[in-house]
Image (cartoon, rainbow, N blue to C red):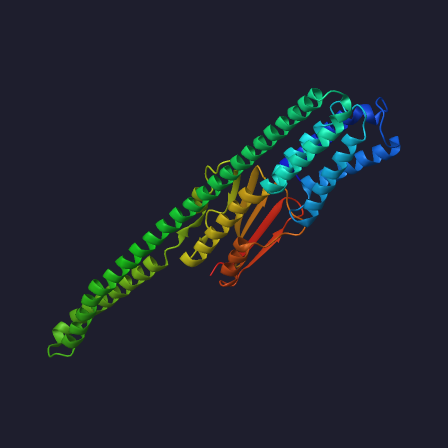
Length: 365
């Protein structure tokens, strides 16, 4: 079951508020200027469009749903003789719009709401009373919008902080691995150029000595020759091991995912996974992209990462408990990850039916 995110909870709270402030007119306790059944239909349309605006994907559909909520809220307020707390609907719409549309559009909605409030309160009598009511609700709208914008900025800063945290850790891990690789390469070159060269010269000298006169020295010379050849083979073998020493992938992933702000990462990684430097770097970049996407888009509290060897492949899977997506969108990050993995002969799959799951398969060799 998909976990409810903040948008879904906000929509539920808005539903409760809308029904609460509309209860007098809904129950027929106050008169309406249109038939009671029609007014209830408008209220139902308001609730539906507001919920759709909150939960819909960004785009034209969300904008149209918000426009429907704005218009129906105006109709509701203008068609009740004694509006009571019904103008709170306008405040709700203004606060929600701050999350959905640009600030200039929000300002237009607040201005429209204020005109509607003025028209609704004109019949109340003398001028001061409508001015007081309109001014009161205008200040509440402005305060609600500013609070919403402040929360939006805080959420964006938290997401940016988490993304930067993951990026810096990934870069640190990859730099350390690169430094170790460079050091191994330097040592291997030194061994090959210095000791290997000397042993090669020794072998050539002993080979020449074997063809000299004096059978008594031949046996010792041949043994020395074999020792020198074995030593040369050992040096080359050591050089090969230094060049191919694998990255400790499990430890690198643990370091990368430790202490991410606002996200609890659960790891299940085989300790004996071994990949060369290029494949290990691709897997670490995939982990970085999975964590970044979870922080940025999923509104998840937990992320589970598993990594194991299946046959001749290393399989990385990341699943969160966030919103998911019926039709996952492949952004630049996912496309870049897929291209990097495909270049190594692997593949990337995504599934947004329950939370969001990314599966990465990379050949082990």
